[in-house]
Image 1 (spheres, rainbow, N blue to C red):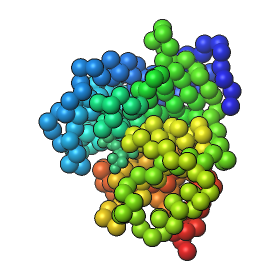
Image 2 (image 1 turned 90 degrees about the vertical axis):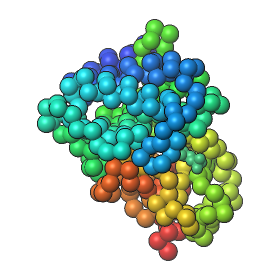
Image 3 (image 1 turned 60 degrees about the vertical axis):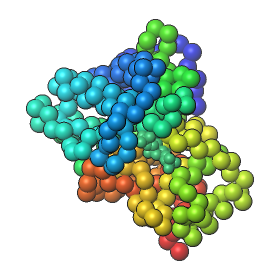
Length: 307
Ligand code: AFP
């Protein structure tokens, strides 16, 4: 991994790596929403009094981030359709047919807003207004984390690498690290779901990790937990349980974009049996069991599940 001291902005970097112009414009536009979202935290600490399509209580900030991003994408003329964790259905826009399809979790980890832990925005970009496409078909994926620093991690596609930027005091995203590679020797594990609901095989897997000296690091924000694992190595899981055979996390808004970036950084994402990025989505709010991180532990759960 390389630490960068000279300032290279996100805009410069996109040009330097030869990112296609409209895709670069879209990524820049989305990156510009980090500051207004971040600035809205102090005044938006409460519940919105509404529920999202999955029946979860929405925080005011969930609604605000969804509206801000939607309005921006709608005005941009670059996007043909939007899928969002906060919208019941796909929003089709009157933009050119070949506008991008954007899947997003506007504010992932919203139960942590009132305790000031890191939360973020997750985005997956498809071509031709596609929303219900396989994760592996994505053109680009990115996330922004609102933590002690505001950072942005993105890839512009297979073979293009995963790069991290930090919002500096001039209000610009500057390159922090390029070509992130997920370590294979890291031992962090972030296990979602209640232990009492684990299946026998998942319990065996977790026991194995603990026996191998894996250290527990779970915050309640998928984006922040996976970000840590991307840097330090290990595995995040939100498994199928006795109560929820599809787990909790969403295929389009959480699993696919984060899995695409982790895979591009040399890691892997699986539902325990197969590569999540190869799943043909059937519904916009489809859930999926998740194992994502370094290849070693993801291969291990597949071995256990396929036994
Ligand atoms: P929200 O965006 O609705 O807060 O979702 C949080 C989340 O989907 C994911 O970010 C966390 O990993 C997971 O849920 C936490 O779930 P538990 O509260 O069951 O641990």
